[in-house]
Image 1: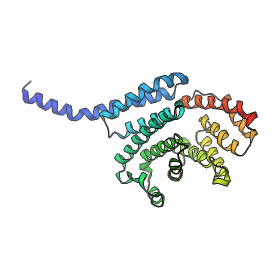
Image 2: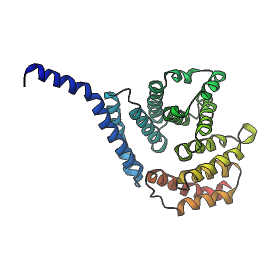
Image 3: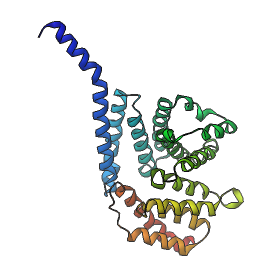
Image 4: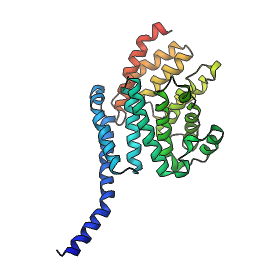
Length: 282
């Protein structure tokens, strides 16, 4: 093969290499994510997930503007720090990374929304109202990451002050698509409206409606919805009957559901703890 023909071949290969690698890594990331979500041994995930965190970091290093990889990386970092990390400083570092990846995906997809995190709330809310269906692929993961970032900083009032931002975005998500993420936004709104008692601005009955919507939209297969319903709403309203009923339903339900096995296993572990505490709490 002549030198000029070899040169052309190399240029073609290099020009397509980025998209080919991006497609390959996205497929690997999706497969690994599926494998993790279908895992029913929590210790395996607890010990094995850090290797995947480093792997997805390497994928993003090679394709720093790939929205799918950024969203996947944000989701993994957020889920791991929220479910498996007990050290506060480490949880904060990991939630930082989750939020950074989600925010970069937002900036790549919707540059006009890139500065939304810096807007004062009086300007933030009008900006949220401009969010459209096509934006949810990056806006929803960003709001989830922000919620996880706040969760890792519950003793920081500056972080707590961002809760209304999460609520505003989740509300916009369900206005656009009430079934988005099979009720994921409904579940977040359930928790957020039940964090505080009514005297401090909490809205327990609105929380109850969101929890029930989340359960309905997942067809009862997301056991975490019932666990959080018991933890946040039933405990706030001192409804032991509902509390114990929900938790027993979680423990009696099959955890092995494609795409939900890990979160259902976590929900059952949490349900056992909450149920054991029930006599003392009530």
